[in-house]
Length: 315
Image 1 (cartoon, rainbow, N blue to C red):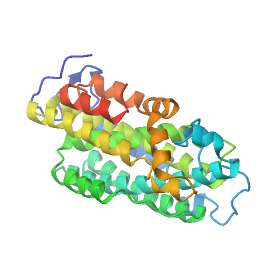
Image 2: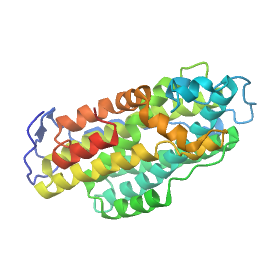
Image 3: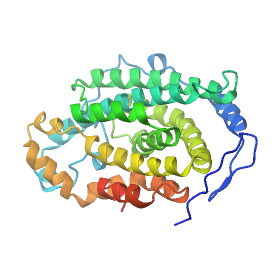
Image 4: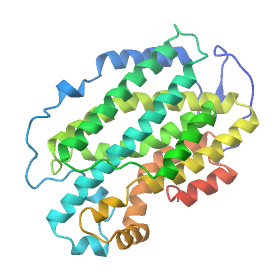
């Protein structure tokens, strides 16, 4: 592990360095991302064929990424029931994505509130907010297309997020942004080239992967900057808040109602998912790129690290 970055107060034009090296100029990063956005942005309403019928015998999520995969309960299920579970889990993940993106949009608006309105950094944040609006509408349309219900997070997690987005500091906001973006991105990169999966789902994940790559770059660069310049108390709060967010995220990842909605015993299914070595490996693999990055820049320390371990996302 690397030593914690030293807190300091600097202007955007000063040279900043962390364990990963020199930080790039904030405006230059934003200009590149704006250029990429101009070349590689999509309107899901016209880009995807929403009127095409669903394909018989195809999955809505790769089977290896379905929560019960390779459990005793999974092995007793028919292929049709397994595929139906994938349909409900895809709807659950899309619902989680909408919830998360609504939070993210609020955090981005707060981030730019005091920034120069003509800066490239602010213009890119507004571009990302527009991306997230389209993504949320796209996910909602995918849920409806699949015919499964929407799956809201629990009332407790809904209200915890209300508190989090109200009190979150800037580095905490970007750490939580990466938590929601990078694990789903890893899964979606396995989904969009998978010909076993419904074409409409593959199209949705392809658009999301292309556009989320820019969002991840923006959040990573800004979190690095914040962890170098933030006072020590804010660095520590970021470690704890990101760890708590990881714990909530891992619990909310799949709504347990998906199991009863495909005719399974919810309590037994949840227990088998918790005991599944395959599921634990998948979640940790999805988070590894992120946790390695957070470790390098000093976020995974102390209580925050213990919370990340308790989430199951960090080995």
